[in-house]
Length: 358
Image 1 (cartoon, rainbow, N blue to C red):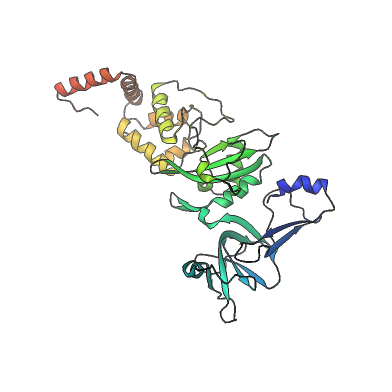
Image 2: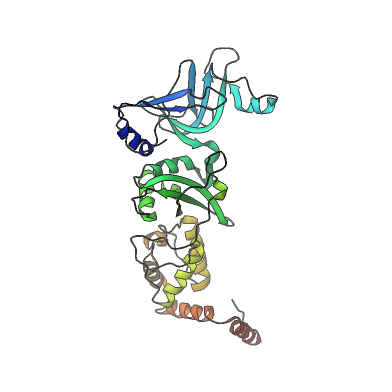
C-alpha cells in the first residue's frame, strides 16, 4: 500500500480510520498493524506495516540470524502465540519455515520465517520491502528488487512499478523496470532514472524502463512476472535529441554501442550509462576497440567521455599517428557496407595474396 493510492480516500473520507495490516497465513493475518490518521504527514512512498499486536514479536534478521541495524533491510521473522503448529503432513516444510526462537526463554518457542524483506524504522514501525526471493545478484552486487520498486513508487508520476532481472542476451543480466504511469503525467525514463539514482546506488538503477497501461496479473491477482514483455530495444526518449553519427569513427562507435546496449540506434550525444551501460559493458567496449583500432584505453576513459562524440575525440587523442583512427574507421565502414558476395570475394583475394583476414 502506498500513500499515493491512499491519498484520494483520505481526502474524500477524512473522518474514516485507515488501517494497514500485515500478516501471513502461518500467523495471525493481521499480526502487524499501522493506522494512518490525521497526524500522519507522509504523502509519498509505502505505508508502513506498523507494529506487532499483543503477544506477537517481529524481528528483522540478517543472513547470520542477527538483528539488522535500524533502517537496514533483512528478513522478517514472527514469534508469539499466533504461530501455526506447522504444515499438515509436511514435516520438511515445517522444519524449514518454523525455526527455534533464540530471543525467547520459553521452551519450544519458535519463529516463523516469512521470506519477506522488511526494515525496522526509527519510530518503531516496520516497513515492508517485498519478497526475499526478489533478492538477486547482478554483476556481483546483491540487490533487493523491492527497494527499487519502493523508490519508484514514491515518484508522483508512478502509479505502479515492478522491477525484474532479465537476461535476454546470454550472460548479460540487466535490471528492467515496468511502470504504470499516472494518467496525467508524462512517461520519462530519464526522469525516473534520475529519481532512482538520488536514492540508490548506480548498480541498483534499472537499465531499461518499460511503460505499460496495466501490469499483467495472475489468476489470484498477483503480478505475473513471467508475462512482463522484453524491452523493445528502442532508444529511450528524453532530454537528449537524437543526432546521427557524422564521421566514420562515430558510425563505428554507434554500431558497437547499439549492439552492447541492445538498442536499435544510438545518437552521438547519448550517454553510455544513461542508456543502460555499466562497467562490465564498458570493458567489453574497450576490448572491441582494442581489436579494431589497436588502441588500449583505460577504463576511466568511458566514464570521462560517456558520449560517442566525446569518446571519438578520446580515441583520436590516443592514436599513434594523426588520422590513423579515421582511416581505420573508414575501412571498417567500407567492409560493413559490402554485400556478402563482395566480402567473400575480398577474403578470396586476401587468401590468394597470403594475407590473414581479420
